[in-house]
Image 1: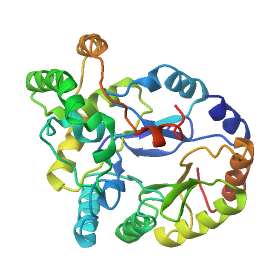
Image 2: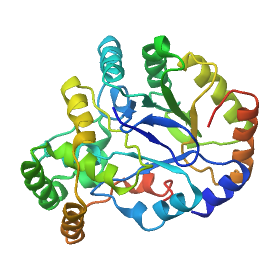
Image 3: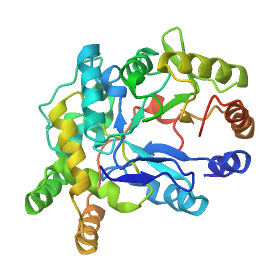
Image 4: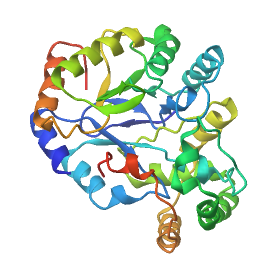
Length: 171
Length: 149
């Protein structure tokens, strides 16, 4: 946070990019309050948890060696299985809102602050269209409150980066 | 498509942007370039105006892809890219030395086919270069018109 303040003092920052999703909420502790105070936008990467929150990945999913997820602890079968509880929660909410899991995950990110712009990636047109549909999904304050309560009861298993990467990444 | 403003900067973008890294880096072998260009055009048709890439994605090939796809839309879309990670002998190395940033910006401008980078991020903090110095270089690039934000 100190780094952001020091940089901002020299040259006003427009935006900070960092990971943020229903399965990586660490930015809520210090980053988001700092950005709000300084008037800096936030661009979350991996808002779909590198695909996990879409519900399309399970413990039998295998990743090619050229796929980064093959070395990410969070995508080890035992962690995928342990984190399935989050996928199930999102699926239940999606069914109730007549939306898809990906749309709920993105709508949740969008609903946190008006100056947040997530950047999901995809190689498929159907997923692109699905992701954009999230803009039309409104989560009411009650729904958000219930959702956040449920999220607070879920402990995510597995680190988001292998150790050799993690020590280079600031929070 | 709804739009949002990034902080107090005045930079307005579609409420959801498009992270382009995965088309050529990190998520398996790169996809066919023509198909990915069509996908980026489909995103523009549907109102996306914010595209994210980085020098190190590929390296370079992702910026080239984004640059080629967005060439006809100059000034109508916002492209974000990043400096600060260099490839040395196949390994990623953190490098935000002022001269390296200056080299990176020229390369990115070239590959993206633009005169100005709309949004330029430091990809990772370089522990060997004080952040004030990095911010100062970006400030100079803004004064020179090579970077907007």
